[in-house]
Amino acid sequence: MVEPRTADGKVLWHFTMSLDGFVAGPGHSMDWMAGTTFRPGLVDEYATTTGAILGGRDGWDAYPDPGGIYGGAWKGPLFVLTHHPEDATPTAGVTFLNCDADEAVRIGLAAANGKNLEVFSPSIGRQLLALGLIDEIDLHIAPVLLGDGVRLYDNPGGVPIHLHGLDTEDPRGAFDVRFRPQYTA
Image (cartoon, rainbow, N blue to C red; front, side):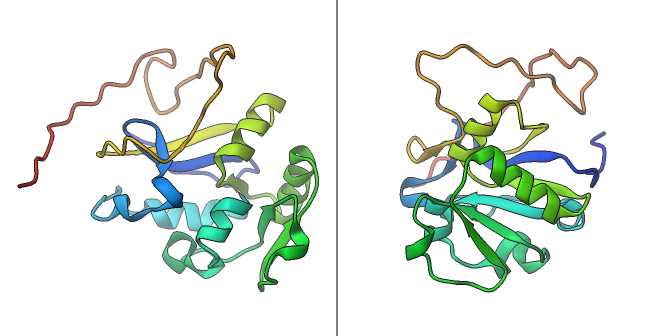
């Protein structure tokens, strides 16, 4: 049984990911998620436990709609970390930051007011992971193989980062998934 999400001031690196490790298709496309279903109540849990969101500029430029997060169920401060805030279109509820990733987390957690700060950026998540600032990685694996796009994690030549599983009896155990291809004519 999966425990409900809690709003206790964590930094969550949160994504739906394809089975082959992509969190967006080419050009940040998200159409591959059409038809994917999630357990009942999951979106409401995130809308309730999320106090602020930290994203990156590439994702923002692809989807510049703060009102669309969790299907419009979530409202709150959204921070976009960018090297060029001066050329961003001002948007209500969105703050464009030009600072180090650890400073962006400090700002985001303060704005989250005790709730969770969700990180919606692969590159920012990788930076925060290297800095030891990710409390949990929260993934929903969609039953699709994309083959191309934006990877959740790349670290060529780096050392593996071992994870401690949550919501499982053996925190070091592998997760078993089994799928059957759906061939289209």
